[in-house]
Image (cartoon, rainbow, N blue to C red; front, side, top):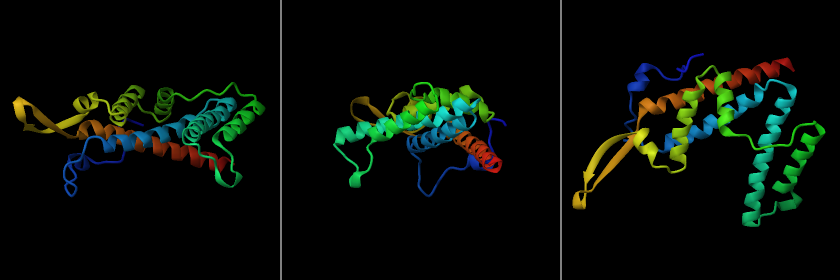
Length: 200
């Protein structure tokens, strides 16, 4: 499968949303960033090379999830209502399961490695997927450089003392590949899910 997925035609590529006016450069990148990570994580865990890796992937994700939940509960002083288990207790359950399965000590999954693995499994060029991810992460974390590198200047408004304010909008030429990567990974993930469901 190539880097160009089936989601958009050439005509779509030339079309700009008009009902909403100009599209800001940040929101589409951050939304697709979340989608790409979810699809990539699903592919990463479903294409594990052996049983141990297949078992470790969801345990590692669950352990990190409950670690973050535990941190939030500690920060807020929150306790689950009705005698529910805390993040720390759930994390202990996951680690106990990993021990029973004979897995190596759980470590937090690294997003970059997940993306590399998933991109290869989806037939995509890994370095291009990671480049799009970096731009999206730059927007998500409020970095300055993506506005210059992955946005399109639309206007320069003069101000006092010779200062100009530049308005940026979504650069479709750079944004489109990220959307395509999401489509391709989602499609490949669905194929893996259906294959596993039929094998059971």
